[in-house]
Length: 220
Image (cartoon, rainbow, N blue to C red; front, side, top):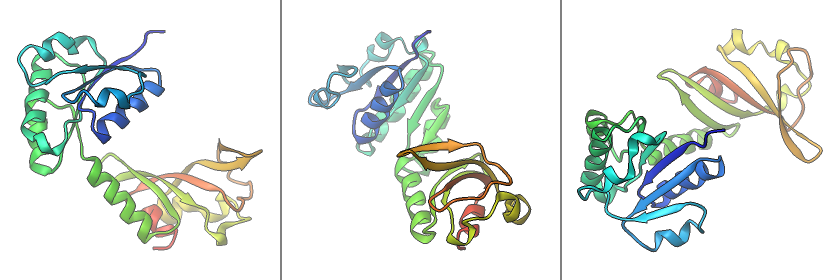
């Protein structure tokens, strides 16, 4: 099996988390950061190049066109640097560039200079946290395109013992249950949902539906 390869530029908290997660999933990661001390935080799990990615020739030496993924995770203290690096990766033929933005203007510029995908992790986390604080039963919600989302909800007490057929969630809320997460023998397992089986206390439902639909059904 061919090992996928990724470059992560900027090993702050966000970049390091991305690099470590990719490594755990079998991706060959090369991290780049100006700060030599960031190397120790990788615990030797993947290679780190101590370099300034904005300097001439550094990006070319990394051969981004040969990598499956390039992540520009430079922090908000160096917005200009993240824009420069994104443009240089695009010019060097990078196949997939994911860049971290700190605000809407930054995001638009990153997209203009070549980022295939722009993320704002602080905003995304803040929005998910606000949802979970407002709706206790809504554990997680991730956007799926412009107007849909994948959500994980804690089974409301009133639904215990009822079946998905009884609840009629597609008709009532345009909400489709795609998996039921349940504790079995001390382990969490994802089960294919049955329309007739009784739901149990502690079940978690993974749903797909319009934005806000999951929050509505678990308590408005």
